[in-house]
Image (cartoon, rainbow, N blue to C red):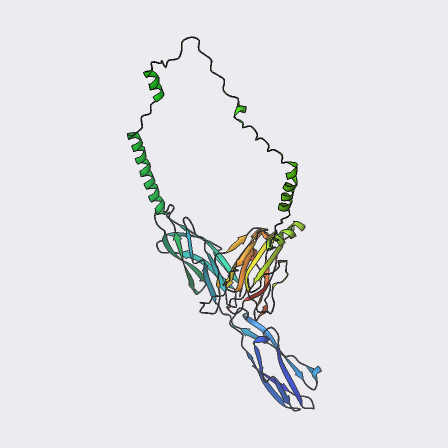
Length: 460
């Protein structure tokens, strides 16, 4: 658009132009200064270039230009206007993990990212060739705000059980359906394992055959046992019959105390001359002390201490693994964990809660094989109950940088809120999960490979 300006004063003046407001980063003013003689008119051009990202909210967006005269700076004026950004839709869906294994069921998760600038409303359904699987999808309908992500839990159940034999692959498809748009299909594989592996059936068959063979051989060749002492007495003419006369009463059985072993005899006391040596040897042994290493203070250690001090409250403690530095100290309830402005990426998060009935999360990491410059989710999800450490990401030497994360707490445990500091961007806005509004998870960070996490803050 073009902005016209007239110098109604009586002196030559120079005017400076500066775009202000929420969309100022996308606004360019050319030229940035304009010199006008009294009674003359000039113009400058405003160019708007909103990015194709969720930050460019669809609908009217106010803008303004601050005009400052050099000769009379007190006469600054700010004309305003509205820029209407048209809506666009972009959805990204990914199975986490793409392949699941099981005998009776599989539990993959479908990650949905709304990369458009309008709210996404969609339903999820499952299908496969031959109707070999049944699908339990929760939630089956989702609403996702721009720039947010949601996870759909899916339970796959085979209609027939493989009792014996090798595993079989069951390809399936989860379809993300939106009104008036071609469904977005995400393919996955369920590997169904046999209830009993083939080698176990073979082992049981061989074992039974060997057992039957052994019993038959035992019956056929049973050894004949006899008493040689009895035969020797018969050869000597000694009768083996009991003597005649009154029958002797049997002897009483031994008392139980007879079976109790006697206590050991105490060792003889050493001579007086050896007492000092013995004491000296004992003193030398007692003088050696082993160095004990203090236990690591994790997020669970910190949150357990807060829970002991405030049993009825909700708390969240966390620490981060900084590349080249290792784990930071654990902080709690909105404090900063990590570095700001030092371009040091995070590799992993350690989170623990109290009073929130547990937490779960997943990491979005750098993807060197990406074709669109974006990262990918790491499977599987990790979860932990109250007071237990939950780890997201990896601390291995070659672990990829974390770009973002998804986190939630139990529906009965309130809500978790987060804000993240991203490279070349700064602190992002606060995001919270809200199960009542259909937002079962909150996403923090960036989707782009070159914008990694540097620091985080959490509250519950």
